[in-house]
Image (cartoon, rainbow over all chains, first blue to last red; front, side, top):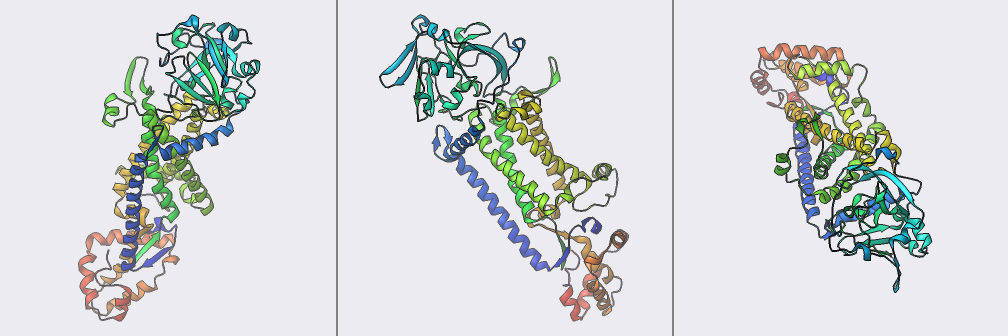
Length: 255
Length: 298
């Protein structure tokens, strides 16, 4: 036994002292254990902010501050060849794209300022330079799929419709025409060169269940931010309401 | 008197016990996340040998439909896991403790002997310092696994911002699978670790709380001469010998002899019976100060 343990100095200690040391150590150990269990329970019982206990929500927001530093227009989602794009694109959610919708009457509403709203038709948007992207679409659930989309870069769109002042603000908000689904996105992410207002999938007009006539494709975010059937776009310095944020998810949800 | 070794510095104990609940929380919240796309399985084409995880497993642990909760916990406690692990490794490097953990040239061969010992194939363990060869390999592997979890985790958390890391790990899908496999390995480590701690016994567990490893054999060193001669007064010589004995000056050679002595004597004679009367009979003042009656053995 001894030779296995001579890695450190051996010391002699009275039984009494050893016993006291042991008792004190175990008391401290048990107190810390109880404190940890108590803190864990207390943490989950904290008042909720957007369905997440406040301390967790605070750290998630700090995570956004920290990791958004890495976001850059130079960091692009990996591009794939056309052959890699899925023929059967997964449909995962239909909130905000109900049957009560007239595609012929649709116009995109862009609220530039109070009382100054643009109404744009699909033809107006199709008239802008077209950008294709084939990338790995990532769902917050954990699956991903390489898919092929096309539309106008949001940054091109903003330049064309004179949204320079608006894109100096912190956030953009998007909502479906029925206002049942809505997302908020930080300006850096919406102005990312791969973010598009999308009207084509696999070279054809968007199917209804993929958000015809116009949806958002934003590779630097999880799928929850890729709003289908855009009705309204507006700008704000406050966080616009966000459907999944209200259900307890991270507001940023960036990749 | 007891002979002890300061086995685990307080820093090591702190890192260890912080890590335990943090890893548990990371695995738990990871399960809540994984459930939302629980696609991994062992099998080939249509045949599935083992599904990760069976529905009964999810139901029993109340895992379904808690993705948001899982993510919010996972992305908070990831900091504690990473920071605790980082400072731990820093401590190992600065304090030199890494020498006791990182495997050496003999470790691979010796670890087989340790495993054979633990499986009761072999009787004796090869000589070791703080940790045996199998422990060195296991504890070093688990540090590397921790680093692996941070890197695979980071590359599925921000795959575009850390794209070179993500591609290095084989891309997003592979990184997710690797992160999952590492979690299974952590769980396996945890199970084996708990079993080994139970088998190793109380002294070993206590040392991770108090830091002190109490050497039983050292006591018997003092006891051994006492039962050679039970006549009153004879103990004085034996105790004087025991007192002159300097722990620091021992070498491996004499230690080996000690072990042999111990093995030879303990089965034939029981010091618990022999020593006590001898110790009590002794009028020596030396004895009262150096060894208390009845406490010399154990």
